[in-house]
Image 1 (spheres, rainbow, N blue to C red):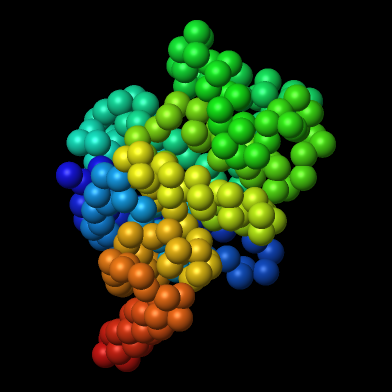
Image 2 (image 1 turned 135 degrees about the vertical axis):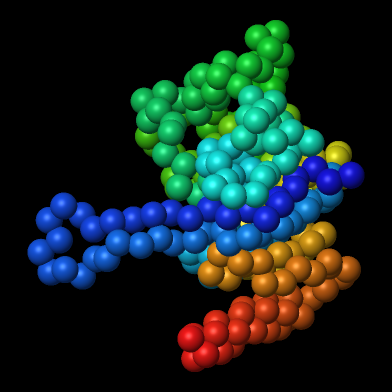
Length: 264
């Protein structure tokens, strides 16, 4: 059964020059973060999105989480359409993005999680236990009562992951989750990802590390200029093999675009 489904999804972002465009360098137009992308993620599997900066990886996560809605096509999570049944989708999805900035710096990590647990409708009777559990899973149990303003960037990143885990989501969306983590914390995090997968959680994440992708992914999908240019199931694949697949995939698209432009 597919847990996450994208059907011919397109998401353009239209832009226009700022009010005082003295140099005339900015032009109106649009950027297509997703351009007719179709993708299926089976339940209890880890799919890793690879691609250059600006290829639409984070936008994909935000579409699945209902932060964005598709301009064309549709996104299904657990059978629910993100446009028609957004509240049902949000109950199933936990999201941690690399640019998370929503925590209150003058509250402790635990107090922040108590606030977001209430927003996520985590039952009051099990709220304290759940917060302690996610703090422990992310290595923040001892720092739980420390003010967030005193957290390092790595601790802040781990708190974002803890927040995503609060509602025990069926689908976990992670944007460059080890971006600020030290090697020990990163290793512990990947152990957590494997554990969640074994428990049946569907995980969709982005990374720029071939070794990390090869270590945890069941499937990788390569994105380039808003398009899906390659998918591959991993069966004991090495990082070097994944690297070759990645560059061959994005290279083929570049050649196709150059040919189309020369014909035009």
